[in-house]
Image (cartoon, rainbow, N blue to C red; front, side, top):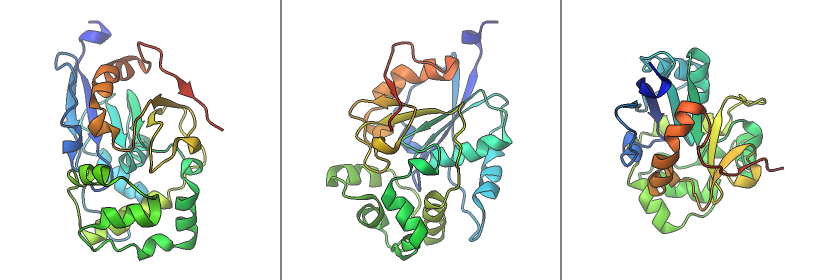
Length: 235
């Protein structure tokens, strides 16, 4: 049996508070791939990121699966990978280590400013953008909010804290990192060794799904792109 004829199980982890529906436009050949959409589970108030990742790893039911995470979901899958034997680990619109966080996030983590974010409000996404991330275009914010599934304060407090205080000094070299060159949350100038999507923003998994439909199959099966796309190391 050839590699192409085997069914590869692909698990997708959405971004912070997002629903699996962010992947609704992704299409993978069902004769070669089976898609599994993971959902956020409610963390205990003081649960460590490691403990949460171990809990989430139990939802991956297949050996040598492919794990794909978006944004904070990209951090989660990197932690989950420590408990799994994976075929491939892919992150999208995310970071591979603490060094890739923008200065404003490092500052928020160091000073504890993230603790004052009004996560109990329904429009917490708007507030987070203004306080921790920077200005988003209203159109993009509205599109992102369309896919938010969790507004629970305990989850949001936990998730923001874990994202900003994540400790990872040495990135896993096996991680395949896909990043938009117009990402507003994790600016590309702080990101190293990523496959760049021209014009891609932080929500490109939603509005640039055609790029992923075209390129994910090769990345999943071989770890490489069939057509050459610039992979930049930005200093």
